[in-house]
Image (cartoon, rainbow, N blue to C red):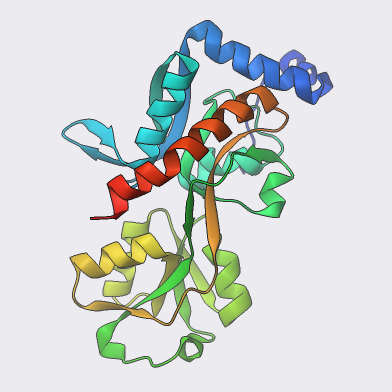
Length: 251
């Protein structure tokens, strides 16, 4: 369903290259075009990436700009579907032709790291349950076997199945999952804590249920073997994550 068709010569050339050569090629492409292309979600995810007055802003956007500055190149952000193009980052058939890296609040998972590479983590969070106040749930286990809304392609799908034996319903964006909860299409939404807290601020009919079900680290996704690029990303992440956290979360 998610396969992309490329010219056969290019596919076989990529497969035959060593991991070091692949990484050099990726960096060479960035430097030759004098621009790094960064994938971000095709929906607003405040405060990580959102559009305001025709301009992309947020934690992830600032991080991307600082990476470009470190490389001495321009930056281009492209919006991509989370469960489509971005999720291809951790599927083995993706050739990394549409973008160089993805900064999209991506959770580091061992299964994903077998296919793509990750930078150092830049944000620490976890999955939480969002419910309607009027339902008066007292414990997470009250939702066992119930309908749980999740964002398609996210780690929440597996968590809902494993921890709650839930009937999961996937939505393309967090906003649509929250709307489904308000419309009583699902009994709860399981998603990143930041999304849950933002939803509560915007709607007093919603509330948290319980503590975090998981703890997760966000990192930048990049091609396997792109070690020269990873060195740059790690440097920028480690040097900037505290400052960007204070800018976007302290207030």
